Image (cartoon, rainbow, N blue to C red; front, side):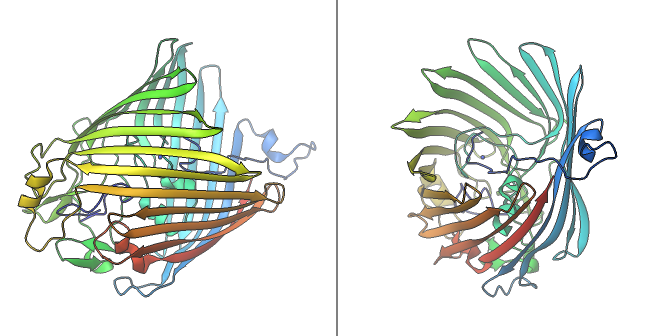
Length: 439
């Protein structure tokens, strides 16, 4: 089975497996390149379009032995990103593509992250068509109503935070008014998470009752029919008394293969409906946020199917404040309540470890800036008292100048049980380093 929304969901009977500033943390600085053209202007300014990007070298290694993986290296890649954009009288055109060589997989690849056109047919209306990065909600590394695809492989391997968000092939329509702002996203073909499947990162396999990796990669029954396997997401938002308030709706599928088809032995993406609300604003000299959502597991309304996750209620509250100069502290509390818990326990296959009816997660973010804010030292901690496991993300990032930066960090997993959300990854604890040239 696949690892499901691991930052949110506990292992189910067949357990398989972020729009606010703290979610993805991508560096937005885009300095122009230094290359001079003949006329004395930088070369990039001579182009008929804007061009930004970077070159990056990044490597990581596992600190503990994992018998389910053939290599100790978790990362070993060189990445070159190009991001051209052009504003015309009729549209804003944007693309972003990564060209990389992955030494761990021993192959080259191209990852098109954006390829879209933004149209404004009316003053109150925007339409974006094509591949794009989508995000909304209020959580910091925790997602309830943000049901756009995530890349948990990149997150756990130590890539830059921007890669936590995976692209969507969608149409987004945004309408603005004094009464309410409306965002409607239609994805004609299902875009799942880039989930943990056993490659490079081991996971708990409930069919085998043990940890697995390259020896038992997740096999998935895909949903890739145009229009039949579509997704629709809706957000209504407005400012009320200085607070950003929003309502959400989603019709589609669980983003990770949390279901299982016994006849084919493959993991599945069951149908899902989700409905929720959020608010965010100034509280006690800091920023507070609250978010809630109901996950309607459409293929198992009564919770009696052991191969499909039960419906859930999810709740999140958080607060962030600068407690000293250039030192920010943030914390969150997350609750996940399983509906029809008695039916779930009765349907649980013999020998399967049961999930808790209520899963609790606490997070802590510490961020210190120094050396004229060129040095950033941070720590993010997930701790689940119900699962008795934890996940730590220490990171040090130093900007040498407008073009060069270096960073190092770790992904540290702690837990006694191999079937809990973070405990299953304890042998995948790793350290990583990277160097980047931006232009």
